[in-house]
Length: 161
Image 1 (spheres, rainbow, N blue to C red):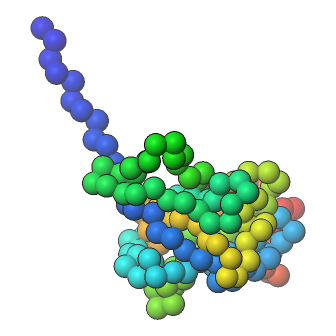
Image 2: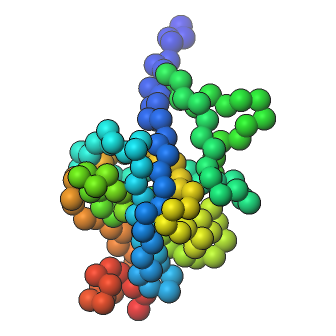
């Protein structure tokens, strides 16, 4: 007798939030810190230091990201509309009072995140953010710890040896 298989729970992502670039800080020749803000971050919440999120980028040749409509089951794409290119990042800092989210980007050449971060300028088109996991605590700093790296007092971050 065949028993029905349990259905795997489907996680519905939160609606992406539009942001704009407010600051860009070069950290090393291959890393840049981008500070994002926007009205849609007003109700952004945090839960802990292991957060990751999806960053949605503009299509190649475009300056602004086009986000799909959002329904109870997730994105609703119009005929011919593609999902925005996205990558997963760990936020560096969330400043709830200023509603600013800081994300560090590795500049490694071609790729949606690297290309966008190289061109990011204050006041320019931003990106869409979708919380994807645990969230960082307000005012808490966290970052990536790459393999074979050493601590740099000059940047307060991690640099290649």
